[in-house]
Image (cartoon, rainbow, N blue to C red; front, side):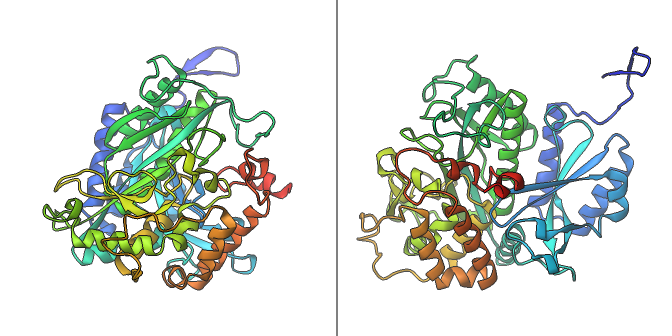
Length: 487
């Protein structure tokens, strides 16, 4: 590495921070991932990684990250030497995070979840950094009720005590647009500029979209994602990268990292990656099909070779509970004004509250599978949903909700009802839902409602055919404090 000295001459090696080759990075992250899956004792992991940080002189900082109530990703970089001394007493101002605490009770604690420790590609994040997820606590060290990652972790731990594991894999689509910060400078008269007009599966290897996909795939492989396939999607400049299923909490963490790496990779290429559900009217939108199964002692409990569609009674019960509460769940699965453009029947929209093995307009699809891969696919989820809240709500609904008497083996595959067609209708169903209040708590439910209503009121109520400025720049994954304050 070259640096410029005061005298104008070049020198080498002034900044000797850790840079790990991609193949070695993958090995290290897969090993860390396995420790998390094996549920190694948290105190042992803490001691292990603290010793590593103390011994590895070339690490300069530790990125501690968390997600707010809407799923917006937050990161704090701690100097390594400070973190080694203060890892058990990290605090932040919760009143500055939308959906968290109020000013008079603003201080929150950030406890490190050492099992989530990962090494970062230095060409994307800079050399000498590692990343770890945090668990949010109140002043007394009690798990904070608005931390959906903590809620999902606790529920996953409860399933583990019962010998079960929830397995989840998502198919998260996105768009690549020309220019950096294209969302924040959006104008409906101009719209977004596509980087590629290549079609489904057949973009040339040197196409800008294909080059972006290749760089993103390399980075996520190095981070231990266990890649499966990647390709351009149906719409121009649209992509999807698939990776292996894993335990629910880790699946949510990986999704947040997937979006982070995608955005950073695009920015380095002069592009913007957008996970808006429908940034361009008239073409297919972005979805995040969520594949779910439950295993017990290594056996897939959703599989039954003799069952209807080779799905077990447990799997069908899971589906029926989700369908019964489809309208209640809709605001969690489709949390933005823009989300409801995607639920358009002209573009294979999964807006019908039914299930099918073949009909892609169904809220829940049953993919072709075997004893290992049998699963259900919730197709209604938008890529801007909070993954922790989404997985938590779907799991608790699938296990605990009361199924409607209207849904049975004869009627669950018929088109009886549609999901809400706009965010106001979704808000109404969510607000009236006693089950959503039961699983989230009255306080969290109210906070979430307030956030969704505030965003909705910043955009015209009627969606129309033109994508409006408000639904883009006040979107929870796009806006910043400055833009929000200009309203």
